[in-house]
Length: 173
Image 1 (tube, one colour):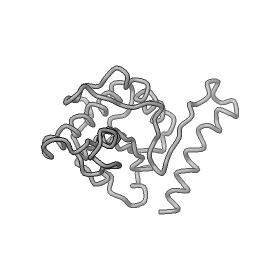
Image 2 (cartoon, rainbow, N blue to C red):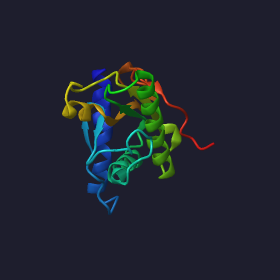
Image 3 (cartoon, rainbow, N blue to C red):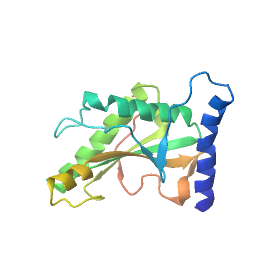
Image 4 (cartoon, rainbow, N blue to C red):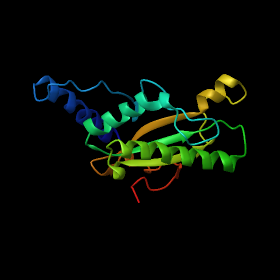
């Protein structure tokens, strides 16, 4: 696993180097990773209770699209959508799946290869905060983008779906 992480770090460092060497007149945007998760400049949000993206999600989604364009070695990016625990667990799971598929389709509509994104819903199964407060519930309602495969191989030998439920095929029908 350590070797995969080192290889990933090395490969992700190559793209900005090409801009420095004058091969690209436009410098690549800065991408920050924590572990294998791409950190976003802003949040991805949805209309309450639906899978319809809010307009204020565009900068974050454009950042993800630019990441996929710049980092060709990432062969699969998992889109993880999580919820708080306020509601029926089956309904929350279904909503997170629909939302992850909506994000994947947005990315595909904006130039991402549909085979490089994996929409995955987690429902309320992976909280990052207590669900007993409004602040905690807000933290648990989130969208994450996690590198799942590098050059066609699962990173760290982990399952590509990260333990969530794959939402569907984002490729155009």
